[in-house]
Length: 340
Image 1 (cartoon, helix red, strand yellow):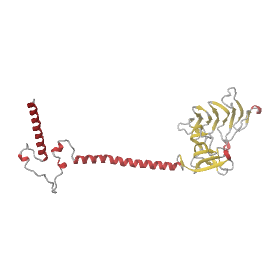
Image 2 (cartoon, rainbow, N blue to C red; image 1 turned 90 degrees about the vertical axis):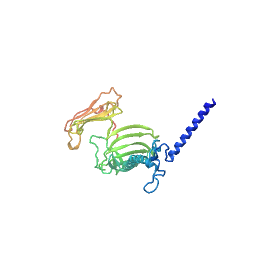
Image 3 (spheres, rainbow, N blue to C red; image 1 turned 30 degrees about the vertical axis):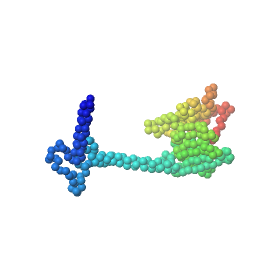
Image 4 (cartoon, rainbow, N blue to C red; image 1 turned 180 degrees about the vertical axis):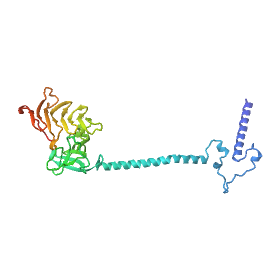
């Protein structure tokens, strides 16, 4: 037992001595087992300048056999990485700067333009106490840059002389300035209505609120027509409009209009959840002296719930404007007409 342990210890000692001699030979540049012709030079090779040559540039066997990269390869990898990263980094910086500039430009234009048309801000105020109404809105800088569509009934204008906004024609004040851009209406300093106009026509989303700023009504418009409305045309280019069926929240509701092929109004009236209500008017396809020539006036129930009501004709006219039929006055439902 002792003899075997002794032999093992001697073997380990011999292996240790052999390993140390090998390491010393490699570090001194001399390999005892190498031929004498390869070990005649005991001094390090000098570079042309007289300085010792870089061990990394010559790539000694002790490093290459261990698989370590040389300084040259590390530099090449660094250059390749920078060449790949820097152009992308510069491009991203340019893109970020451009995006920031575009946002700043859009914010600036939002105060002076709407849908590409220049506008000017205006304010009206009327009433007193808790009923004080303030309107903040914009009008076209040039009233001729855009015109409302001929078939849109409600066109809103600002009349400077009376300092009021209305969709009615105000006599002796000219044509008025077309509202264009954001609109806000306040009562007793609380916002009660807001939306946008395009050349006097309601456009985009409109909302109404109560005194506690709770949403009470919401509608969506496109150039004076409810956004969901169905429009039909006489031609494939969609220039000759034939019919406007008002649709809100999936139901036929609002002002219906039909047109003759020459563009003149043929019929108009109101729907309430798909039911005709109120007075409906039909027109001739002629327009003498610039005014519409009525053909027929029909009365429907005042609301959708009066299913027992039988519609009747109130008046009929010929093409010259002469009355050809008129229902007895006492049988005609008199409706209160209020100004919007």
